[in-house]
Image (cartoon, rainbow, N blue to C red; front, top):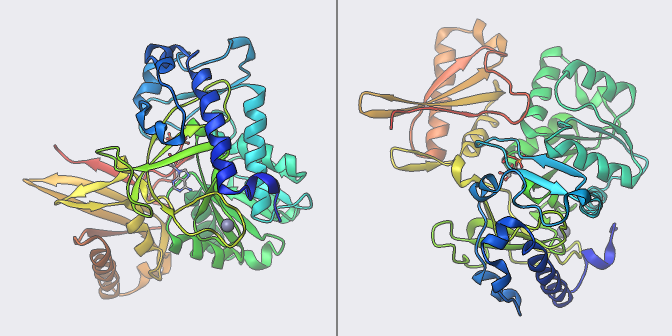
Length: 429
Ligand code: ADP
Ligand code: ZN
């Protein structure tokens, strides 16, 4: 079942021809934006998709330098909206939309949600922020186009969240993974079994943050739902860039709207098919703010095999994290998601955690703070000590260094309103 069968199952050759035509349009449009005009984008000619590699890349810093209006390529009276990134990694960047762009975005999110099985009979509760953050509006548009009943609760206010889920018989939710985990912890503390409390709940969309396959399974088991991975970034509208189909083996990235490359982050040369690299995206269907070869910093790999669902658009693997998120400790590269993957599998460990990096003397240390079940604190000290050692040991097996582990009471690690802040780096460089 497809939302837009001709596009979703378009033969690769036809898709490539569409991409080339749209790339040419995109370049012509981009040439009208001050930023790209200054870059001399009009001087580049593109006659095949492989010419893409000759074009200059665009970085987050470029978007910041072009602030406030340098990236706009249509008259301002035709721009109807701006959004900005969450600012997880510094000054926010701004993205502009025309009515065409909002409509195209809506279609993409509708396509994703329909692919996962959402229908007009669903009650959809969206637990992500409305405002500059794109997760709220993006999913609202998609779900409205499908004809769902929308409940735009936004993030936080967990008690009301749970009440609405029960009273309105919510069947689909969208949350960032750290909030879904927080919700699970809260229900556990309240002694509520979500499978009984919310029998209509069947789908959870998890997006905006890296999360492991183990975390997905934990959320699915706990809530009794299917969880789908949703990838997007404000620079590319927000949600609706890549999404899992019912096979849930990688995310289809919509190549009618986005032209993708996966490159070595240092040399910017394409990696071999299936190898891990940085995702670089060119918009193909954006009017107000075309972006050429945007370096997302997100690390992923293309899945070379076609998907059995019939969609021809390439799948990408779960995002490991941004290249900026990678911690280098004692010469070892570590992604926070590797730590989460271990913690989620240990009984008694709750779902909120934090990674602290400090320098003591000449050495850097990693301290992993985890919340554990309150009843464990009544156990003998020896039992606690064993748990601590076990966590340190299992982490070592995954990340190759032994961190210090600190066991904390539930609720003692702060919960962010938006995306979780997992790493606090106090190292002296
Ligand atoms: P910010 O860059 O300030 O966090 P955004 O809200 O635009 O602003 O976030 C987009 C980023 O969030 C992506 O570039 C990626 O790093 C991360 N992200 C989004 N969805 C996922 C996902 N499903 N898995 C992993 N990371 C994701
Ligand atoms: Zn598929």
